[in-house]
Length: 154
Image (cartoon, rainbow, N blue to C red; front, side):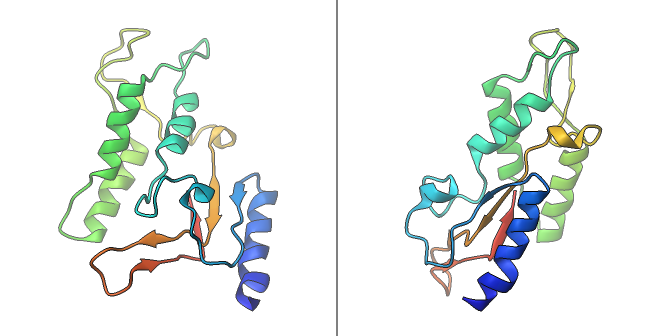
């Protein structure tokens, strides 16, 4: 309990003041994945949050979102299905995607291979940031049945 009161809660409160969305799950062992916006505790990335965060920062000059659901699904898979020989290689690949990734076509304008913003570096206020504490992740086949990071930043 002291860790929550003296570390987690103050940090979550600070993130809230910085306009982060915060899901504070308290200190109890989590038994319901929907509280952390998931269908099960094996999910480590939040598909719906990804869609709802990336779509509005990729708009045409007149403000229309142009990424299709299919393109968003492909981008999500590109991120979630990264492989590599080490965690460092996977992290480097994901970091490259954050700075530059593209899809085949902007179906609204016909532009070929347009860049997609996963993060809007030019207008940071357009990004969606989410913090969730006690983010349980089930780890089947491992020594521990689950891990529970104190706070996960998405």
